[in-house]
Length: 114
Length: 110
Image 1 (cartoon, chains in turn purple, cyan):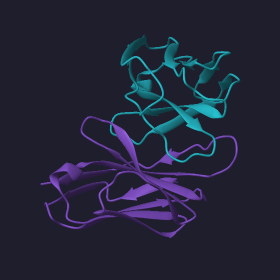
Image 2: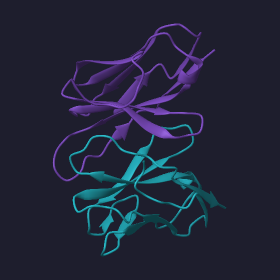
Image 3: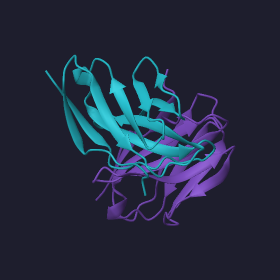
C-alpha cells in the first residue's frame, strides 16, 4: 500500500505548455506539501496546505498553482512551462500536532521541459 | 537557509556502525532535530527525530548532546542499501516545511 503517491512518475513536455502533477495520500494526514529538487539536488519547499488551506507559499512564480480538492489530495498545476522548471517534484504529507511532525514523501515526479 | 552543518561525505564499511555528525549550534529550545535520508532517485525517507533525549528506533539511534548544539545519527550495522544522502534538519514542533541542507553522502562499501 503506497502511503503517498504521485502521478505521473515522468513528464516530458515542451516549453509553454500547461501541465499538472497529482498527489494523493492515504495516511489520513491533514497537511500536504510540494517540494522541488533541482539539478544540483537542493530540495526546497514550494507550498504547504493544511486542511485544504494554503499555509506556506515560498517565492514560487505565479505560474505554479496548487489545488487541494480534499485533504487527501494536493495537485500542482504549472502554466507556461519554462526550461528552468525541469526538476524532480516531491509531494509529502504530515499530521499536525504536538511533538514534531514527521513528513512522508512520495516517489517524485521527474519533469523535463524541452 | 539550513540551520545545520554536516560533512559533505563519509565512507563506512559494510557491517560496521555509521556515525553521522551534525552541528546545530543555533538550535532553540522548542526545535527538534530530524534525520531524513534520500536514496538515489527516491523520495526522502524519515529516519528518526528527537528533542533532547537520545532516541532509538528500528532504523537508527539519535544521540543529542546535553547542550543540544550537536547530534549524531548512528546506523548500528550499515548495509550497502544504506548508501544515501543523509539530511539533518532542525525544525520547530508546529512549523510546516523542512529546510534541507546539502546533507552527508554516506557510501557503504563492501
